[in-house]
Length: 119
Image 1 (cartoon, rainbow, N blue to C red):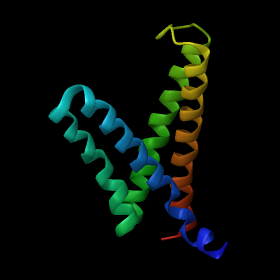
Image 2 (cartoon, rainbow, N blue to C red; image 1 turned 30 degrees about the vertical axis):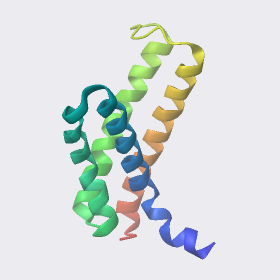
Image 3 (cartoon, one colour; image 1 turned 45 degrees about the vertical axis):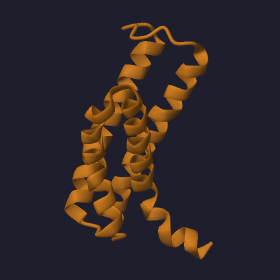
Image 4 (cartoon, rainbow, N blue to C red; image 1 turned 180 degrees about the vertical axis):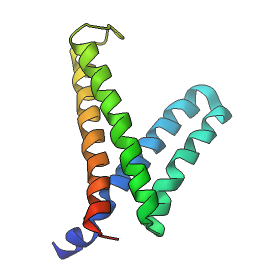
């Protein structure tokens, strides 16, 4: 349990690295070499794991809270049919909702790491 408590501050960064890796593999199958710039998005998160920096942490946290807020708004607009974006089955809508919620939680967790002075 102490090992888990020691490394739990890295969970949001690993989450975003995993999402970027999935996004890269998905785009790479369809478009090939054009997908490689997507890997650049993972560099700040990997940098936070290797050599944590408070300013970069705050910037990442605030940026991704803002992006997650826009994701939440877009998801709610789609669910309430205010602005219908897609005609996905309910199964995918639930998965997208989970992604949006987890994305927001991880962004808030990054801000919590900045405030908590865990680095």
